[in-house]
Length: 289
Image (tube, rainbow, N blue to C red; front, side, top):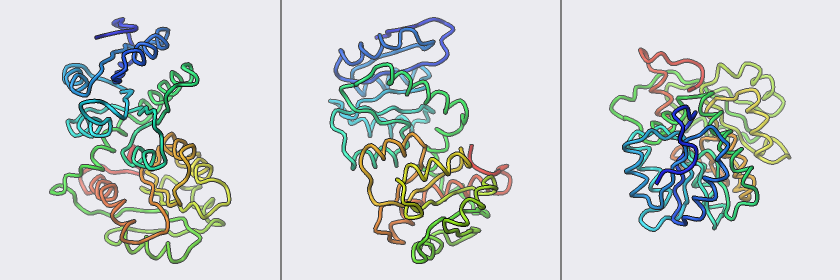
């Protein structure tokens, strides 16, 4: 079922999973001039079998497969320890689905039919660049969502909590209670705090800080803290903005209206993992690269 550039010097292996052979073939042909080895399969079962015998760097995955949903397949691949990035594709994009993709940890979310195949290739290339710039990210996302609770030991975690709302700051800070150092900031203090962003192991960003879109605010923070785990609190934005948040590698979106219990539930596994990484003997440093 292999297609595309199969040279021994391929820089990366890309797996296309779609039950429409024409879609697989179209993508494979559009990648022909890329230095990638391209595989294509048409079912979740075949994808699992291929990943069991071949190391895959990026999977381009249709959200709706006949034998298993793309979401479930990605969960299973991650639970089996495959450290791959995912570009999810769908013909039925929705804000609800995009939120699910963001919290799942996919690297990009694209709609079919594709308007520009060159742009799809550029998206995959950017995902590969991000993956190589932070090679442990896929493993971190897997562990954050499947923490080894027996091994998770608490250790001081420094969090930047940026919100103009005192109630949100109080509720989030209470939810992060434990061996945690929380530095709260409003908009005037945010830039100053980010000047030393490396001291934070987690950034919680409330979209109400700025009149711009939540993705613009997240992008501004990303320029100062490119690899820090990032949680965004916002009213559910449209699909276009959610796609941007996915591309900015936002780890969790907590939807407003804010509720301390919902916030605690949404960030629990990520915080547990970050504390585990900071535990004595783990060599934790600033960020979770």
